[in-house]
Amino acid sequence: MEHDSNRRGPLPSRVPLMRLLGSPVQEILCSTRLVFARPARENQAGRTARRRGWRRGGPGGSRLGLLVFLVLVGVAGYLATLYVPPYWTYLGLQDVVRVAADTAAARRDEAKARADIIQAAEEQSLVLTEDNINIFTRDTHLVIRVSWSVPIVLPKYRQTLRFTIEKSSPLP
Image 1: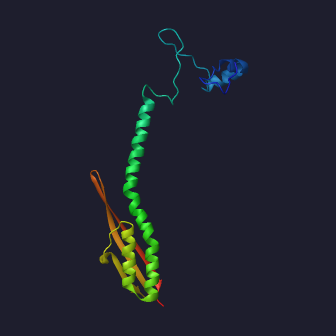
Image 2: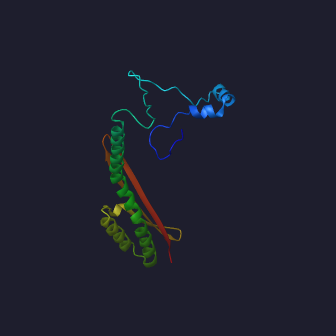
Image 3: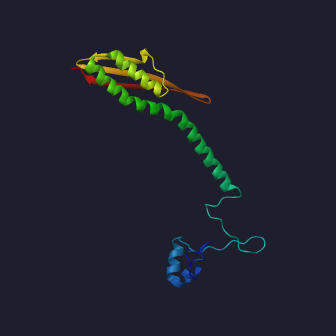
């Protein structure tokens, strides 16, 4: 009895294979507990019962798996809507602060640099004040440090994400 790989259903019994191998091979396989042929189960009606594979669950098993998957996708989506925008804003302000540091160092205009950073933050729906932006000199560099925090409110859990961008530019 040959198995057609395109046919669905359980694999045929391996008993004919054992008979083809002969008794010495069968004895070796059985003595090392590598038994390929197992007796078929019979139900109350005397028919051979089909064994369910490990992939097939009981009634409603696939629906429960789908429900769990959808809940996990929903939770991941909800968390993404809370956590991705603050990090996206952080990444968006990196270049703005770098350019502001370069222009403030070249023109010696700190007020313009503060205004540019605040305007770019407002475009990304972030409210920054003058207190969030520190401009100072360190050795021969002008340093701009922008710090802010974003509260994340989850049911029964509150977290505050703190962001700091620090860029320096050499003074002329």
